[in-house]
Image (cartoon, rainbow, N blue to C red; front, side):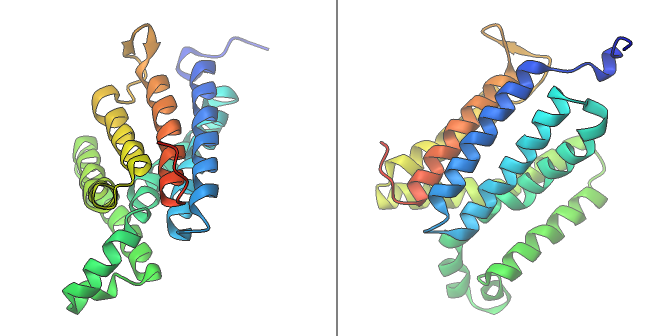
Amino acid sequence: MGRIPDKQALYPTIAVSDAFNVAGHVYGAWLAWPTDRLAGLGLAYVAVAAAAGVLRFGVCRGTFRPANEGWADAAAYVGLPLLGHRVLAPVLEGAGGAAAVLADEAVYMSALLFVMIWCQRYCRSDEAEELSKVAVNLLCFAGPLLWHAAGAGNTTLLAGVALFVLGGVAVGNERERFLLGMRRENIFHYIIGVAAYLIGAGIGGVAVL
């Protein structure tokens, strides 16, 4: 077998960190599911994206790249925002009018899919698309869950969401940048894997912290 071209070279450490990421999100989804099935489904979205990452960086980058990138977009635009629905639903119902329709789970999910398709089609740069992901997750994931966790005194959920945000903002997922001798993308995977477990536990009523 010939040498794998540099542009298709595998990243075993990323495959390992993504495997940890899969485990954290699957366990989090399992913990959240009995209490909030939509939140469990949202965590499962991220688990699928991470599993595709294991295959991409551990088996064949070219073959599994589309699946990894496609599911990563779905996780950002749809998966994580699903976690905020249970908190947002009463607010949307109280607002009345068109907003109240979004309280329905199927309509809410459909709206997120529409936003994903619209942003992918009309965002004119990668930076604009990333900004749209940040906005969606601030409004539908991090913001609602942090507000709910703080008000309910749910320290496990609060820590999980705060850790997830910390991983995205302070560490980032840059593949070729390093922190303490480790790829930032690896550290990001480990952080959000732990965060997913805490979020799932917090939603499921399992007091970890």
